[in-house]
Length: 455
View 1 (spheres, rainbow, N blue to C red):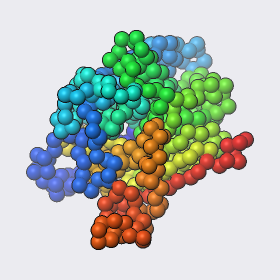
View 2: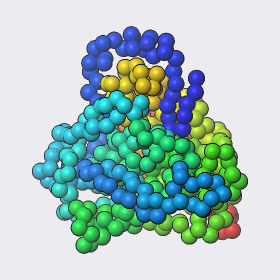
View 3: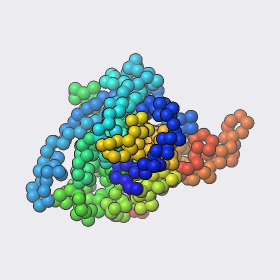
View 4: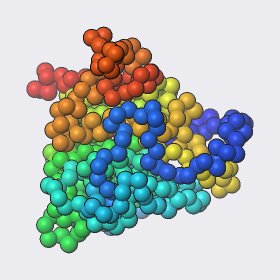
């Protein structure tokens, strides 16, 4: 049983067949491929906001990027114009649609060939809402492989709450165009930074874009899953170990040194507009891409999310080790106990994913699902905490801190209300969570080490 970076959990065929028999045909018939389900057990901030949601697809190009796949080690670095496809969700004008309506996203499953249509709340190409100041930006980065729809549930959710959410199709990392891993290792951080700059360009007055004047890039958060998380950790100051530039199957000519700790170019690339970061199952720590010196360079507030049984990115030697090592960051770690690498990030498995794929010789279902946790429930919990985090750090909503300041072990929190429904003195339950629903979750906090910050 194995997995690849980006979250392809491999189950035995027997276990999948048994699960399908238990679920039965009616369960499959109920699959509607919606990305916007809110469970009755969802915490408070998972609910969608008041804005109608618009969505647009944009094509952007980063000119002169090193061409990793066509550069030979020891030869001059080839350069090319790197194309990226973006899905942009934003608050839409009144009348563009209601929060109960929706549109469609036509895409492919993990096998790269099976077509599926996802359904959500966004209205394609709707006019943007212009009744307020520009909205903060959240950049979303998928795993390897993945695509811009893998976390579309979160993109829509954030747009309904007054954010512009931009999800990237990372060239060479998508389901239908997955190329050598070296490209992803090099390009992930550069893609994320480029998209922040592109959004600044498109939001500027006179850009000619429908987003002109609608995005406040000075208040940006960046969110990544798996290899997306690998990029996020680097973008916010986690310089790679210089030795990692020589790892097997890496970028040629030790080009990864450009993003290594201590590099002048790396230090210059720090972007003060990025006020917060969320890394979900970030890949790389368990195989040596960071050390203590590199992680100490992170000063941006960070929310880490992981499953305690993650066997792709690792937990104790992976996400938790990054969390503990980012000593100069004010950071949180949300753990789904016994969840694996697919914790929280992927959309619910589309109906087509329940069928065996001859192209992949597997069930695409395993790319989206977790053996222990329900995907919708995890999506809702992620939306709750991401909302609290970006509201706090991008909008200055200090009331949201109460959603993060909780008893670390959810199972130890006490639910106690008086007869009027008000919290009793002994009530310590996680704010916004219904009785019993924090069990299986752990939320830890570490303040920055002031001594190390001053060095």
